[in-house]
Length: 67
Image 1 (spheres, rainbow, N blue to C red):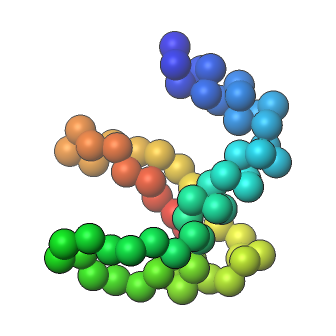
Image 2: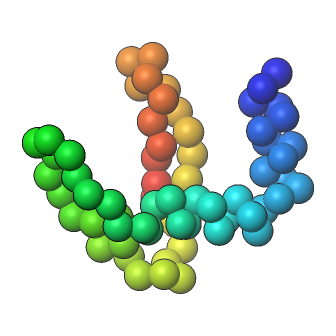
């Protein structure tokens, strides 16, 4: 399945995955329309902060959960 391939890639490319996820989450971006909130780096903490990510489905929609 696609998920197995993604998991295999993630296991073999942990450093690259960490860099890409960190960059995607911590890079400031402009909020569009009526979206409100803090920048990702303020929400998740400064670079070096440790967090755990997992994917899940909520009402058949994919969500990213960070702890």
